[in-house]
Length: 505
Image 1: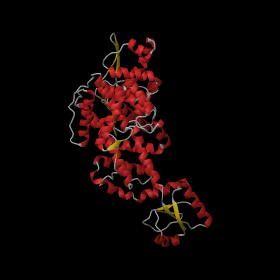
Image 2: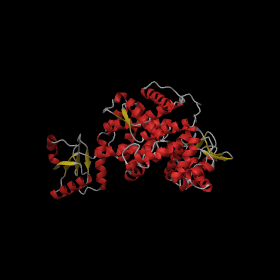
Image 3: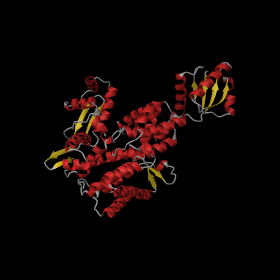
Image 4: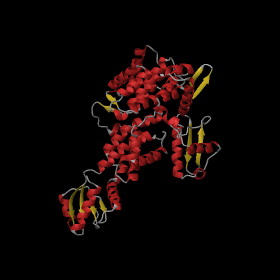
């Protein structure tokens, strides 16, 4: 659920009053914030405006400008506890689900009061809370003499329902390793029916068999939520308008999407609109998958857009984190496989949730911030929307794993001119800073060439100047301070920095 702060709403209000460009420095001054904070606010606003046809454009030398296709709706303030906590209340979730699945059919207050065993006045209070939550999806609650119903386009209604289902599954993420655990299944059965839940699970199993791979989380839950919403809406004979002709694709995923719709039509004896094939196709090409058999990606057939994005990302992160990620081929392959569906999600505006987002932001904060910074820089030259924090958190895990791998199994030679005591202190501090590294020898400068003829190493750490080597050299003080740790990591980073041009070709 995307919400904004009061300051971000204030920025939108300022921009709506401007007929042209608003200077970045002037906007920052009006809000009493730094330019870097202003940039983060613009990113949050554009994320909020995803699917709404609005955006804040930022151009060097000109400033900021609001582009809107229609009247800009008032965003929701994130501090509203009613909105933040609505999905934690079973009754509110039930009422929201009823209204969304029946929309545009009105439901009476008496019907809802009877169903949930509470007074009409309590239902009225609940509807106020649900109404605020629905505003996050550009949906309106209409109340008239016929009852209460949701007004909005089918896509936004589906997104709201998907949010409910996804939260029901992911809020129990830490309880189990299964994809749709028993507790979540009970809750979903209560809201959507046993047969519908079972059919969605069976259909995804059929799709996985056709793909010959397993759909991993959170993509499984995303597809599951979409199918469950589709079935519920079709059961209520609510068909999404076919305004736009869906493109037809000649590939395996499209054929599987066609088979999936045929499977549903046979199960429910209902005719599904053609657009539903396209929806399932979008989820299939936007999902992370685990092949049944190990696959080693061939760089020659890798998606070029994803490859370019991965190369740019590792290049920027190598500079930001002072760590050599450019020459890590396994990392590049893994990123390409992840980024290809990620770019599809951004293109199709498919939102995923990362249940470990808060933990990743807390525990891996430096890497998370660096990845966010890098993706923002890439986005300046990209046709896609910027990745959400959930997407950034998934990328962060790949980068953190690669960084930790870099620190492993390095063979080091120490070059010292000082006495035994000093060299032992240096040895002790290096092994403490890099516990997985192996110091294979400690030698004076005069014996270095002789030692290198006998032993191979990844890095030379020296307290004295030595002649230029093919092996990277880090010059440190005998006391090995925090600055020396940075010098060592920078030396490793520069080891293959020249290889960057080879990857860009």
